Image (cartoon, rainbow, N blue to C red; front, side, top):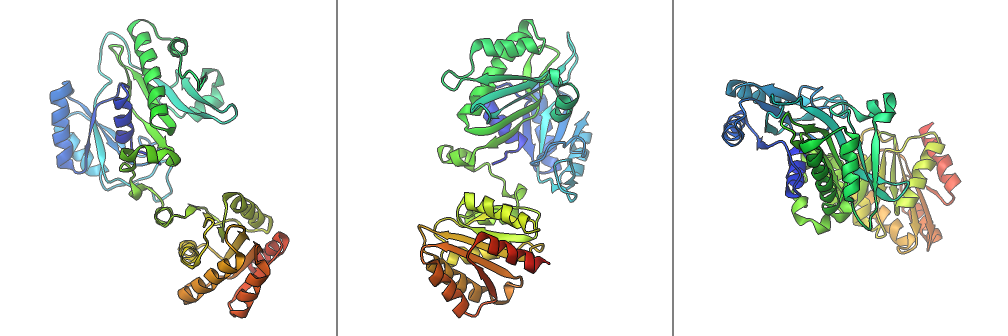
Length: 397
């Protein structure tokens, strides 16, 4: 589950990570009040107005702007709230901005120049350990830094039995070229950041930039946080942070129905039970010359209701030219699945306007095929994987 910047900063702050202070606003009037409050608390006269959407590159799309007075705060808030923000990480249509974060200006003059760094915490799947990735080149695309100056990318792998060790936090600060107060601040920042990542059961914490201010404070100016959905049962308060306006509407509907669904860009809808079989089915579709339009796992109880819900989800995609149902009857018998397909097909009626190929294998598979054929549905049946592939290829040609 992705979080907005302000939500990620709330989690960071709760673990003692220094952050750029900000207040959420949903209208220009609220933005002005937020700016006034920040001025009282921090003394800042300038404010940064940030669009809150689930996408990076907001500054490049015009979603992050500096206001030098209250008049500009209101003007910029009015421009940003309601706009469709297009960034390198959004579609061509962009994402509508419903709210903004009004933050303090942290690039103030002082004894030294502010410096920006990059830092993230994520799982290194090759080693099975969490890893802190960091670079002295912050504020820019980390992919560009990795490609052009890979020597400026550092990593610190964390032993899960000990967590982040003091010497590792010190090494991070040293590799970033810090000393004195800033050195101590960075060791505290890195330690607290890792504890926030681990304590919140996140799959990604990305801070770009981490800022060393002119008076040697170290704070998170931005935050990109992805929570592990599988661990949300341990964090009931985090579940309320989900913003379904930022998510694919069909995926939200599928999750509410208890179905595992991911929208893709292809032309063949998939209805499968079991994640492994779903992946194999997607490979089968590509082998047949098509492209999967979705990942859809109906689970082990593929009854009429779930099959109908699955049909409805797939048919919402106008790019779908055919549907492949690939069910292995283990826990659930194939004849029960067939009955579900028949009931769902009859219930949906004219809504189903694309060819359907059904492959049922496992317990009572032969009986299932008989039921579908006797029902007189406009459905092609298959027994073997290769047979199903051939029929998909035929309806697409």
